[in-house]
Length: 163
Image (cartoon, rainbow, N blue to C red; front, top):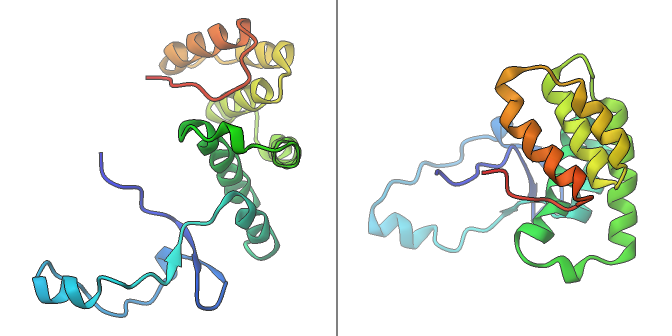
């Protein structure tokens, strides 16, 4: 229920990406009205956008993390009711990213296998997705696996709400 705390942000002043865990502490803001007013307009960082994450691939060495964030930011179009903003170019970029991400995921890890299943479903490769889904044996993933199977059978390639 807490707000998302980004791991990677973009500095608006220098246009560079940095990990928030590596950021230097500049000041500490308490809840006083004076400090809230003083720092009210501080806006030097932003969450990267779909397109900005592609730029991050050039400078951030954690390719898997960046490609997952690209995928999540693409799905945000659906989560935020902005699917009409998805152009063919955006769709093509997303598909290229998903194909690259598939190569980075280790199938011996059940969570990565589930992620690959979802990527294949998003790409519209339903039979391949179903075959991978059958390989998931972790009983803790059974409920999720069943929900994925329903969406695969409906040939739904868009993001959907699990819970």
